[in-house]
Amino acid sequence: RVALVIGNAKYEHAGVLANTLNDAHAMTALFKRAGFDVVDERIDMGVVATKRAIRDFTALASNADIAVIYYSGHGIEVSGVNYLIPTDAKLADAFDVEDETLPLERLMLATANVKSLSLIILDACRENPFLRNGEGPVTRAVSSHPLAEQATAANTLIAYAAKGGSLSYDGAGPNSPFTTALVKHIAEPGVDIRIALGKVRDDVLVATGRRQEPYVYGSLG
Image 1: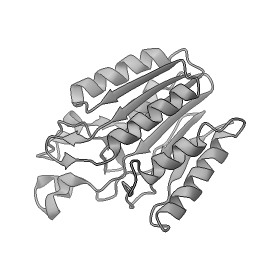
Image 2: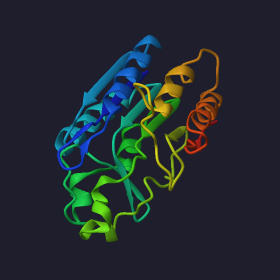
Image 3: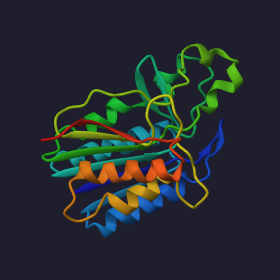
C-alpha cells in the first residue's frame, strides 16, 4: 500500500491557502497510522517538481495492491478536463494551462497498474483565483466550475471534495471539513471504502450546512 500526499499553499500568483498544508500533514499521519508501506508527502511544488513526483510515484505504484494520491490545493476545469495547479503557475494566457498545470488524467495513469484499488482524493474545488474578477485572457477558457466528472478505469475511485459547480471550504478549524471527515472515516477497519466515503459525505454536509457535498466517481468490484 503506497500513498502520495501533495499539499499546495503558497501560490506565487494567487496568494496563500489557509489549511492545505494542515490537511496534507493530517492525511500523511493517517496513512502512516493505517500501516501504509510508503507515504510520500510533497509540499508547495512547482510544475516541474509536481511532474517529477508523479513520475516517481508511477514507478512505485506499478506493483502495489493499493495506491492513493491525495491532493490539497487549487484545481480548475477547462473544456471538461480537470487540472491541478502547481504553486508557480501564472496562467496569464489560456494556452498556459497545458504547460503550467497537471491534468487529472496523469494521476490516473500513475495508478493504472495497481492490483486492487486506485484512490485519488481531491480537496481542490476551491474558488479559482486566476479568474481575476472576470477580467483577463484566462476567463474565456477557464470554467468557473472547479472540477468536472472524470472517466475512470476499473478499480479506480476519484473522491471529490465538492460536486461540480460548488466550492470546498477551508472551515473554522485546522483542517477543511472534507479532510476532517476523511481522517475520521477513511481508514476505519472493516468498512468498505465506498461506505467510508459515504460517511465522509454525510459529515461534510452537516459541517457546512449542506453548502458542500462531496461525491465519488469510479468503478469498483
